[in-house]
Amino acid sequence: MKKLLSLIIITLLFACEGPQGPPGFDGQDGGLIVSSAFEIAIDFTAENNYEFIEPYGFDLFPYDMTLVYILWDTDNGQDIWRLLPQSTTFEDNTSLTYNFDFTQNDVRFFLEGDTNFSTLDPVWTDNQIFRVVVVPADNVGRVDYSDINNVIELLDIKSFKRR
Image (cartoon, rainbow, N blue to C red; front, side):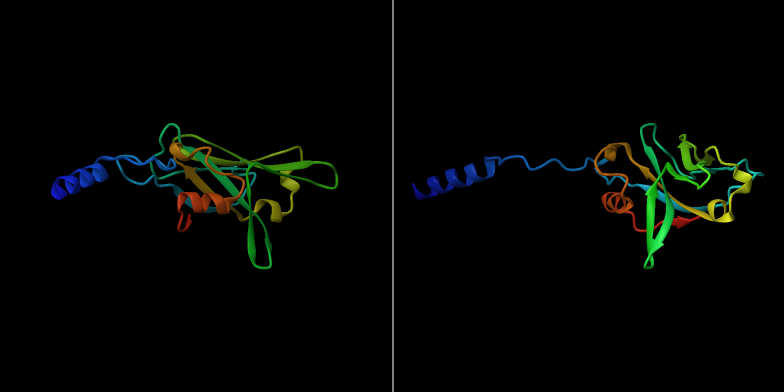
């Protein structure tokens, strides 16, 4: 009788199913969803029509999303990144906007605004540093994308390759 009772208890322990845990991130084919990221320095000039197109160099899926951040400032040695588009207004009430668009093949960085780009101080046009992050479609909408640190943590980005 003891053996039968023990067998019933063991069967019940292994046959029962507990409550389902919180939902996690789904992977592809049981693997991790990996994000691609890179950093690039760009000079906006009249010769390149104040725009620059960079091919990804890797595959993008149709529903993946591209985010671009600009190195806006530094505070006590700490980089301050802002999500594009990013605008500034000058003393003469003209404006400059750093913007981007993307396809499955490349990302385009460009200047917009009603200021005369050819008269801008080089601080606004030369050696502008951008970080590009491709967010896999499964992760879209899961984080505040305006904070690059949240994005880096969510997507487990270890470093940005410099181009």
